[in-house]
Image (tube, rainbow, N blue to C red; front, side, top):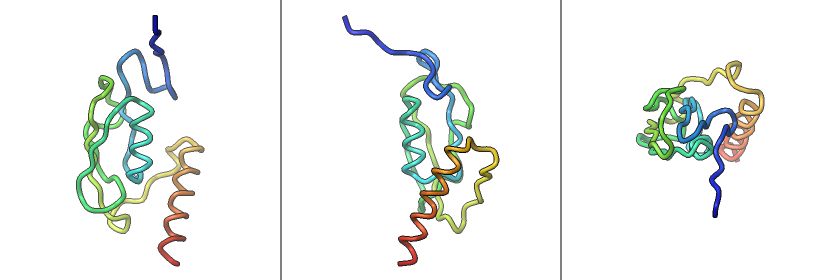
Length: 107
C-alpha cells in the first residue's frame, strides 16, 4: 500500500500538527510559500502586498490544513521587518524579493 510521510519539515511539522510561521513583514508569495511548507492554507484581506497581522498567532500549534488569515497593507505603511530575528536564509530571500520589487518599481 501507499505510505504516508510524516515528520519534521523545516522543524515545523509534527504528525498532523504544524507551528504557525511568523508571516508579518512577508509578501503574499512568501507567506503562501511558508504556509504551504507546513500544510496550511492562507487567506489574505486588505490592500497592499505586505502582511501586517495574522491569526492564528506565530508559533501556535494547529492541525494540518488550518487556514491562516493575513491582513495586508502597502509596504510604506507596514512596519519594518526585524531581519535579525530571522534565519539567515529567510532574511536573504526577503531582501532579494524586496530589492527585485524596488528595481521593478523604479524602472
